[in-house]
Length: 249
Image (cartoon, rainbow, N blue to C red):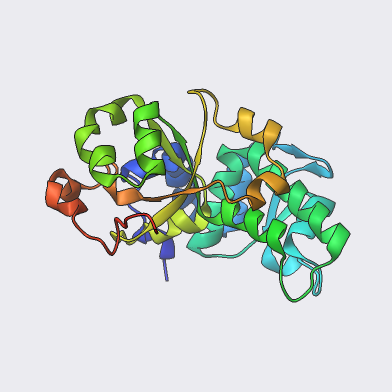
């Protein structure tokens, strides 16, 4: 099945990945694997990890019994399957390499300290949540305050114009995959950035397992973002308590 054909690269949330994604799909159309397509897009000088230049390889190169994150840290090779999940993961690697490297190094350190075990533990769970479902928000204080309070009408209606001065970047590859088939309930774990700048820089410098374990995320149903979904042009779109939930008492 040509799974990549399900992606509509004109969706506004795919803007950071559009050029690379379209190029990757052209290579998939020509019969390349996802790993080969991504590797070709990495260019002659791929992002450097501690173990060497980043390479995308077939999933079968991951030794049985070795943790995925530990293997990447040890070899600088990303095991990649032929599916949308791994395609988006690779596109995030190519778009935000410094941040992905930081997450991988933190994961590998946790594995080295505590082993794999039956459960990840709080720190690894927090790192995985960021990697899979995070979105990065740079926005005026009035929007951030409304999001913190889950004041959806202020966030999306009263201060709707302020979204023109905001930037929401989907980082989690599982989150992006969910939106291949958009559903109103798809919710991101938002990490608020303090200034409009390169989204990688402040996070790479400050990201720690302790900070992530404190669960500093804010829930955001992403299809509520103005300009991202035609249906949200009607105020009634936000009158859905199953999606736009009030804070717990």
